[in-house]
Image (cartoon, rainbow, N blue to C red):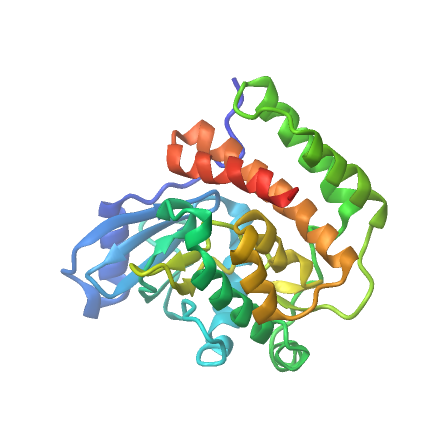
Length: 307
């Protein structure tokens, strides 16, 4: 059996992370190092109570880490929600072949793990809408692009002609393994949007991979931060608006879009297609990695995207 897409090429455990951090940053030596989160591309450790360190697990994540390191400090204080800001940048050492970074902890629980029912997501959705309105301001893209060279939608996530077929492939695998019950509304959405192809218009600065794992909530259900910026790029706003359709529905989605502003019909369609793709991708990962809460949220995201 072949290894899953997210299989690590280098997995940094807490002991190795502590050794790397202590050798490179003596001021942090002696702080407790505990695993915090794992994703497709990175392993994250909590260092003490204030810091998080992010170690790539796969070589494909290296340019993404470089984009984060360059862009995130330029976003600090310019957005209405906290984002990580790398303050420690480590180099290959101690048997670990890649750079890594450390930033102050952005507290919160992933939307995917929150278990928050859809009707109780209104406040978080409104917070996210205001955040995206600021992030997508063309002036911010100009300011960042003046200092950092960013690609334009390098994975073609805004191209419905690319993402709709990819979404169908993942949905077919989920259905074959009995994880997902095929939904005619989802397939109708993909069929209708696929001819739209590549979006027109000037690209803006986008998070690029904004799904249910990357929005954090506090204990009251408000948004507390946006994490994992490795796919930051210039692209159509649909890339980030996908979470409006995969993560929210009903009054919550209305609150998000009220805070964000009008979304043209074709942009909405592209965002919905990407929401299906991302939710299906998360569902495959959650099923394969044994994450039941994430699986429930991801399957719900597929359904939300079509409604």
